[in-house]
Image: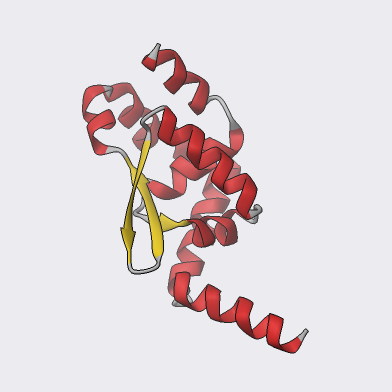
Length: 125
């Protein structure tokens, strides 16, 4: 059943997009939302499915929760590593997501800066 759940999780566009950007390092939900231009509830729902399939795990750092690829799963299921390393870079919209990730990081964006932007927008509005 674990393999079936894993394959089903990989069969969704948004979840593949999340796996794609997490393959470059850990991110918190707000960063995933910003990079992929999706809502918090959408990101959380898909992250939950990826965690249930044991493709993604998380850790807490200060007030933020960071998500990352589950290395144990990658080790136990080499086909997942093959997909991440060889196949995702061939898909055009995933290339765009990777470019968004690079731009996001190059601008110095992170959870703290996103939280500050949101606070500033609320203060203005």
